[in-house]
Each structure stands twice: as structure tokens, then as C-alpha cells.
Length: 352
Image (cartoon, rainbow, N blue to C red):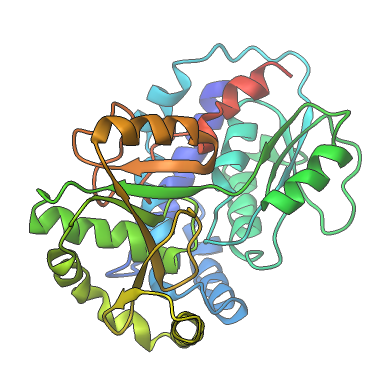
């Protein structure tokens, strides 16, 4: 199977999942193997919701829509054109996936297969329904994928390299356990937003998407703000307000109530609006329903700080702050060439 065949298969997959949109799920014509898979995938979406209370239908469909937008022929060709795919002896690459947001490990899965390797997947128990079904779709539209995709629940064996994503604690375990294998080991990272006080109402509303999408559970979700001294949070809170229905989600509300009680009993200073708390804190990882903030003296000193602590940061959301910044509202819409932790997964795979 050559590169073009692999690209074609993922383009077909993109068209298939493109039927599952946030505003409408509609079976369309001219989608290969649709009669075999459409209703079945609809059922998998329901199972994913029932299995994980954080995986609401809206968030699952948002993830699917984002992947459908990414998996076009134009995007995949642009992405793959940067590499020389010339693997004569395919290896088996193990992927240990997180389960914090729907299909969070899909990019690694895609990268391994598009590179021409075999993939051995160990899923999180929190996200186990969607990807195996999509893998079956790939095997039907491109039969040469059969035998190249394996899902494993127990101990991983017989693999040549590994990509593992987890917490700082599990990363230490991964680093020891896989010390004899080529690896990419991902640890905790969080995303931040840099505000100056000159943001428009629209920019702040877009920032709310970076904060609240997936209930803030993704490493690309903004968990901390950097603001100038004497920053007035009124405009920020006004822009957040349209997300207030999020408090109706029981798991989110429970976290909000718990963390609020902890802060009040500890007599921490914080601001809140009934569904979001903001607290001054130097940490990057804030609890659910909480956003940390920190004051900065100058933008230049802030750049130096963020450069020094780059290993803790996934994305920086800002407007004309740095060359690698992400525009407001776009953290959960990464392109295929936007790699987690800025580690080029495909380059790693092509050296195996």
C-alpha cells in the first residue's frame, strides 16, 4: 500500500465522520460503506456518552467535526508533503492513549498509519468506543489496512517504538518501562492566554471557547490567564456569560461546588460568576470550573518567563504577542501539522 492509498483512505474517513455535525446528523449519499457503518457509528456515539459523563453529545460531535475538517485531501497532502515517506520495513508502534477528551489519541493513530507502520493501540477506559469503530471503517475502505491495526487491553508486547500520553506521574513509569524502546512520552501540559486589556468583546468571547470546550479537560484548554497589573475583569466575565448553561451539567456543577467550598474554607481570594471561578495562582493546572491568573509587569518579561517554563505549556493564546501564538478561539481546532508538545510525531516515526 503506497502513501496515496493511505491518504485516500483517511479522506474517505473524513467524509464519513463529516456526516456527524453538531447542528445536524444526516446520512448523505456517495459516502463509501455508509450503509454498513452509519447507524453503527451513531450507536457508538451514544455508548460513548453513556460510558463517560464528560463526553456529551455536543463535545463528541465537536471533536468529530474538527477531524472531518482536518481530514481533507488538501490538508493531508499539505501535511505529508513535508516528509519523505520511504519505509521499507514497517515497524509496530504502540500508542498508549489518554481519555480526557473524545478521540484525543487520533492524531497519533493517524500519524503511525500514514507513515506506513503498524499500530498497536492501548486505549483509555474513558474513551474506548469511537476509535475501534473508525478503524474498522478504514479496513473496509482500504483492505490493506487489515492486519496493521490492533487494539490491546492487557500488557503491550511485541512492538518496536511507543508513543505514550499521561500525567507527570505516569510519565515517570513510562520512561522507566520503555527505557529500551524509541519513545515519545508526553506529560502534563496546560495552555495559557495573554491579555493586555485591549481585547475586543469578540476576542474575549472566542477565548471562552478555549476555556470551556470539553469542560476544560484538554491540554489545549486555557487554564490560566496572564494579565497586566490593575486588570479589570468585568469585560472578561461579561464575555464568558454565554457559557453559563455549562453549570447545568452535573459533573461540572459538582466540581464547581466542591472547589468553591475549598476556596471559601481556605479563605482564598477569588472572583466568581456562578459557573466559573478565577483565582490568583502561580500554577498552570487549574481545577475544573476554575481559572488561574497571574499578573505580569511587562510583555517582554512575560515572554522570558513563558520561554523558561515552555515544558509546562501546550498553547499560548494571544494577539500579536509571539510568533507561535494561537488566535483566540482556536486551541481546540489544531491542524494536522500542529504537534503536541511541539514534537514532530511523523519525523520520529520515519526514523524508526
